Image: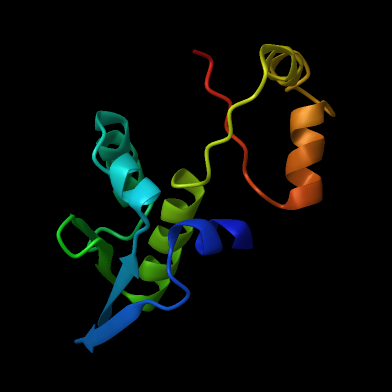
Amino acid sequence: CSLLRNTFFAAHSNMASRGGHITVRLPLTEQALSVTQTVRWRRRLREIKANCPPDTVLKVYKELRVLEITSTPEGVQIAQQQVEERLGPVKELSTAVWQELLRTRQGLGALNLIQKLTDCRLHLQRN
């Protein structure tokens, strides 16, 4: 979703090339940086690595406020997409809306309809 890039990452990333691998540094906003400090994010980072080529390296540099991805061009693209999906904006919902989305999440429910219309991945926390 293009909104994610605008919300969490600067418009441009720094990129370097070395031996068939490239390194991309994605600048992080304050909100994204705070998310990357949680236990849940470290688990998500392992999931991202598992879905990328084996030689993909992801590092968060707090002091530089960047996420560095090193891999093949395809590996960087996969990792960047997965990071954007997992660092998406957080929106608080009223209890009634949250319950309705959970109730209708299967089949052609509201959650699936919103995802199809916006071409964005949505995730509802059950807690």
